[in-house]
Figure (cartoon, rainbow, N blue to C red):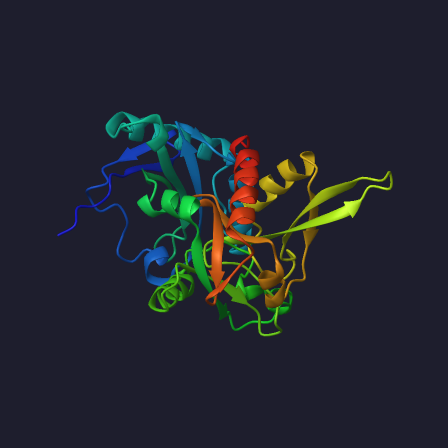
Length: 313
């Protein structure tokens, strides 16, 4: 029997200003909690590196947006920040990292509607180790397959009850997509819409890059780096990591673009990545078995983006 991963739980509780630490080895939710029985809730995942959580404000903002989409009234951001600090301090005390390089902690912010008829939602912060495969995929890259998500790009606007732009606990479809990809021999997937657009990964945002050599008008040539992501109004989750990386890339002189993208744009790119808060920047080696760009260019651009991303708080 596999032992559970080291975990710290901190519940948001008005009686505990910094959060209430709970015993993660004991049951903490009612079996009738609507988060468990219906997936009725929202969450966020962020990475803490050497004790410092990254992009906290962006994640808190998106948690609030997701909660509003589900008509959930959640505690204020200061309460979440205090609970995050408590969870990280407790985790690093209980489970110190062997080396600074391995000091990565996944912090999840979770909200359920609670049991049927509950007056307030159940809210907690969970701290646990970063998945072992995340670092490997950042370094070696991934192979992906394209999968039809079953919606067109206007579905989110036409049917807001689908909650396509919210990060909900209803992740069964996302996990099924990953299992299907694994059965095909791939590491991950990229969703496409029924009207032929590139969307997102089950747990990530899609990025692609083009290198273009242009005449600067003074007799010299320069290389323009262009970073592109699918358009954000196509029913995808706004990526906190994508947003932060775009800001850093713009400051470094990259040109930025937003779709619409079609699958051929991925195959024509000089490099493609899946980016998320936990795995960070994972270069895509192959899509549907076809190599993307060249290994040398992919490695070079990935190193440049990693350097930009490392400076993001």
